[in-house]
Image 1 (cartoon, rainbow, N blue to C red):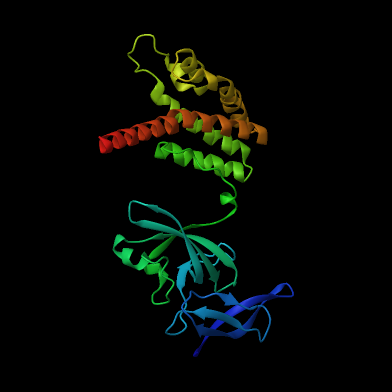
Image 2: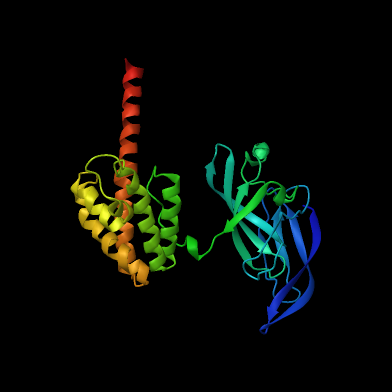
Length: 292
């Protein structure tokens, strides 16, 4: 087994102050695996080891801003990555574990495939082969932080605009920003219920104030059978907290969670359940057609 040796400068925090401790040796072993660092970079004479792809030791480099030390356009060594989602029938997303060469601290980046022409590079997963700069094939679209902590996913099949706003509200709940969460969930309900109103020229429709004010619109929709009555009790949180608390900045955790529950229940009733029934009917027809 052949050893390949490279050098990289790095720094460490020693007794509360930053000191350059020179060039530490990085020893690579030739294995068919992405690099996995071992060892401690913070004391002299320590050795960092990595198992690396066959053919020699190569670093998988990515350039971006470091959220840990605020360095701009610094190089990261990406040591591992895992796929997270797939969209547009070609674009792959990953979470990549990178180590900043300036502060030697780690960040989990959200990485998106740059070009459809690079599909062949991703057939076996993330291209951690050290043959290219990763900047040519992926772009940094964010990083994992406290905003990702336990945030609730939106209901299935909702409108993309509403889904985006719901995610913002769920993120606000996760980071305990109760007033921001209330504003976002109120916006979700507003977007979801506007299409339920009749046209302005229809006789017996609501007046302009009711159309504009969510707190007045919801009772009208319930009374006229355009929203299910069994949601009416939950809707009081929107009428009371949404109209007053969010504007005054007085929402609490309980208020935000009530708003989350109503918003989720409403979106599931308006979007998720009808679409599931539609898809189930399609499957039923396909089974009947295929069998007969």
